[in-house]
Length: 145
Image (cartoon, rainbow, N blue to C red; front, top):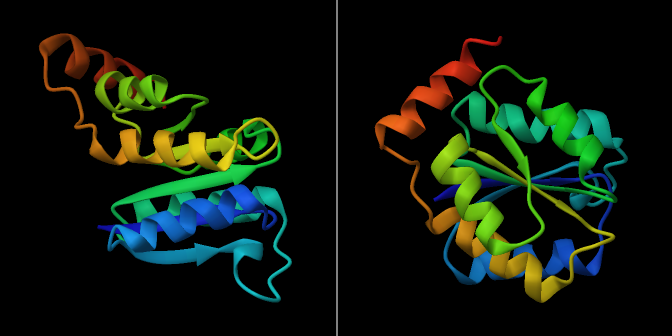
């Protein structure tokens, strides 16, 4: 799977998730300060990470910022991005099922490396919900654009 990973800074949690994704055999596109010498700030790094998914360059994205909130807001400004701020694995699974999320956002402040890996694993493993309830509500959210 091709995964875009973005952040506005490099931290132990970002490095742990990147290492785990590579161990799982995923092809990564690093965005923002995860790339040596890149000083892109959080708003643009977040949008660029979401655009990697919406442009078809990545199948999914994992995005970090200090609180996670700003990155989630910025990513959701990109048409076609469905970013979800997740603090645990079950929330990540539900974001995929009920919201068809394609961008996982996590807080570097509040998420340990071990928990971040659990959240990422759950997000990537969960399918989008195909029940009538799921589809109907995803369409309702899409209609808000």
